[in-house]
Length: 275
Image (cartoon, rainbow, N blue to C red; front, side, top):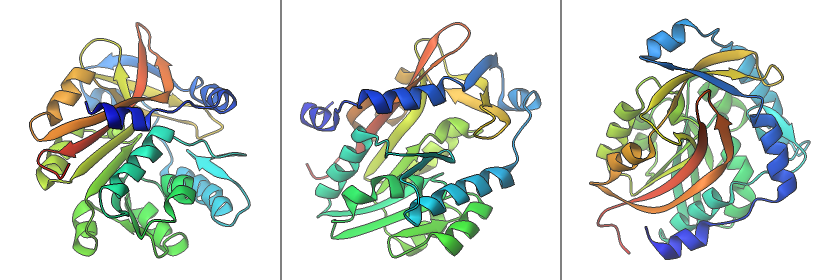
């Protein structure tokens, strides 16, 4: 790992912010160790995607219109809860790319991370934030949130047809996909210069694990499958084509029945990129 970059992204989350986030995440529970995604899905209650979309839409409109400061997972906060390592990583990527940031935010909702970090990115010579999401989110995003910097697309191919992203971000998303390594294989094969992860769940020990997540009712009464990854296996997946520039802990940690787990972030740069 590049020690200069590692030092650059390390930051301390203010205790008051950390405690607010911890109170929210400790009410989220994960149970089980299922043999397959389908098996876990059979014992979940699912979720109403329309309700989630509406809650996120209403919350982010308040942020966009200056009526609220920050939204995460449809919950409004009275101050921005920055992921300082992620923000530092985005600024580092921009600094290596001529003061420009052209990025895909895969599973980026209606632009939550864009609005979270815009204050520190708006000075860039070029900022293109492209969200790849489900159809209804894309329709809503294009109707209510798209602007000169924020765009919405149904898939990576559609985005690349219009934009030229050299970075892709996965923030609290890859663990909620049925076949995460299948998607990551496609991402690696596309040769993005930078691949960034934040809020991605890793076990303290043991192999990759499929659990069932239950969400607090104040967010949305829902349950659905969720992966916890083995860190060594996950990092090994990228090792042939990418250099790990930095690793950091996100603010969330979780207690499973038999062990603890930690959300982490990683910043990868493709081998052979300009130093």
